[in-house]
Image (cartoon, rainbow, N blue to C red; front, side, top):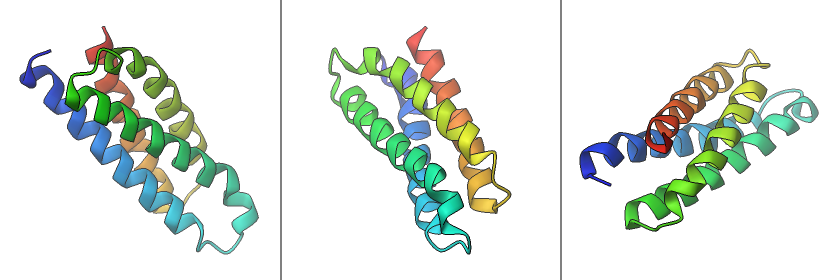
Length: 109
């Protein structure tokens, strides 16, 4: 893969990691924490999958492209969960996850 193809995906993955970590941390401080548990879990899973995908793609691993499909699925699930909550950090995370899924989809094709 050429750097020009992979760089936007690496940037989107990094943005998603940051948004998910921020969202999970922010959710921990919400008033009704029990209602935020599914969001926190989705954020953590998404950040971890994006982190691994980023690492494998950055090093040129033959497994990186395969992991894109899983990353798309996890990002879409996280976006769906975050969309359920009105908090700014959740809405921002949902949008970032959608952009990441789209970036991954463009490279997976």
